[in-house]
Length: 170
Length: 166
Image 1: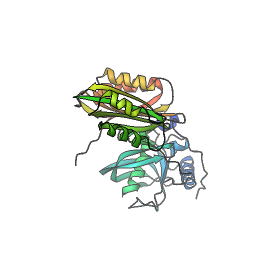
Image 2: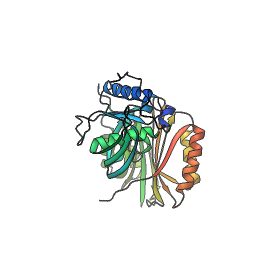
Image 3: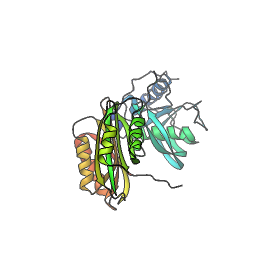
Image 4: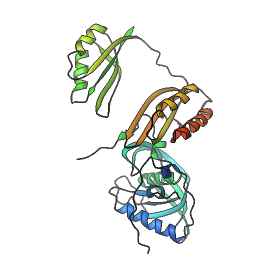
């Protein structure tokens, strides 16, 4: 098992966040290390339920998700990393509030599918993965797949009054 | 019928809306449409009232503590909108002229900005505009916005506004 290292998270307006990520060879040692690093970085970031490679400055299609225990989650698959992921089915669209470690001061209302099917490959083995999920895990997947395509939630907010200053709890 | 257009601006504190609404109610000014927000800690409110004259409303608002108010009479405007609703998102490194350049491109395509908010947080500048766009103009606007965005070094997205009627 590759040990993950915590990497610094980049914030907007970093160019890498707005660049379409390249597809990767999931079996390459760099990608396996990146996958472990994404999980390690996600783990040390409070409230973080997903982290994509562009957020640690690497413009490729790899991301980690873990919504375990989140109150809005229904179906959960624990912690996992996917490469070259694509949404192949999306339905039950619903608006919800989203934040992002790369846009730390704002949140926004974004419409996402409440049910998705995602096709991807697993880091390390390169085996194809098909994952069906719903609710918060589906939202997290769409948010991370957007990152891999160079999109932020800011590109999808519902309207002029759908962005909010993140509350600072002192 | 004439309406009053009123603005109230000042450092935010608890009770400004209550003070304004109370002062206007006392002179018989009826609030119709209004919007209020905080911009970097400044209280900012714009409202349309009926039922009172400029003088009465001005006098009522004058004693309010710590706010600057303006009152003017306006003739009733046509609230109807033309065109299709779209949303423009812009984000990138802050620099002078982002709003000017984007708004000019939207206007040149006949797009009317109906709602706008901008935020500066750190070095990140975010603009979200809702626009009414003539039918069939979206493709050209998207192209022109992409050009303007590239010149400004910012990301621009144009997409249809979602409206759900229940």
